[in-house]
Image 1 (cartoon, rainbow, N blue to C red):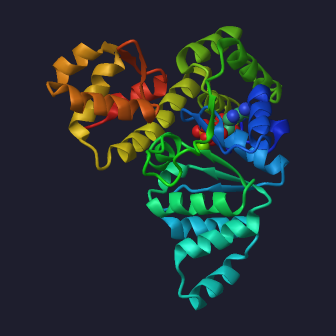
Image 2: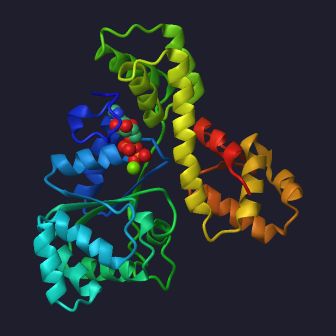
Image 3: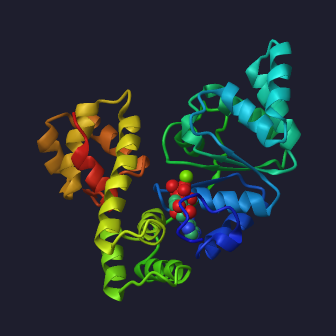
Length: 325
Ligand SMILES: Nc1ncnc2c1ncn2[C@@H]1O[C@H](COP(=O)(O)OP(=O)(O)O)[C@@H](O)[C@H]1O
Ligand SMILES: [Mg+2]
């Protein structure tokens, strides 16, 4: 069902994304490591999960994983270890986690390994293990995905001192659907619920309001068809629920950062602003400001073109309204 809220798991369930799927296949087959990037709710998880499933690969979600230890456990479970077996094995071994992780990689080295939400892992050991995995098992195929912060940035922009220097993964960026595709997505979704009536003007309004973020469109469709809300209520609920999700992600992003400055910057950027305007508003030196803007950009929260900054996702705009200093 297109309006199901869970990530899609097979190619058959994916709406559109044919080109991206083929490109991902091509990049992985050419032996490159690939990072699948894109804003929240553009369908990254669905794409890579379907890709892993269709290719007998291993999909590993690192949400909530803290370090190499959790990573190793997830990978072992993904490779078919039973959880109770694992608990016993790991108790006996007075383990060095990097070693366990390498062993875990060894077990799955012939499969395509897909790591989702990679940004969660902040351990520098991860990069070291990746390097040694790369050296040992040439040809090991790995796909990374997540919102572009933390470790993902270290993977994508390895500094000369990084173990992964010179091994930058190829990137594949998922864009929101264009207007036409968004409308067709909604129409195709509604087709699965012949008992639900909708008007074309409603579809237009939804796409105007939510843009081409397939995740938000799915929420709307689900509220409409599964929960049987009216068009107005479904749209309102989508914005409400969606901004709650984004708000908690923003709060997560702001941990250990200069919260007040970031929030001020986001509030200014919310209605679109030039660099000089933001600078005036925040009253900080250029270097600090540039750092903030760079971080917001690489976390795909804001957009920039020629010194003009804005927020594209309407739900993120709502969430910024709710951020408290
Ligand atoms: N290509 C697609 N076709 C149909 N539904 C999709 C597609 N991509 C994503 N979805 C739906 O959108 C929502 C968010 O997708 P998800 O893959 O979790 O996005 P992301 O990982 O980018 O945040 C889910 O409900 C999922 O089922
Ligand atoms: Mg995801």
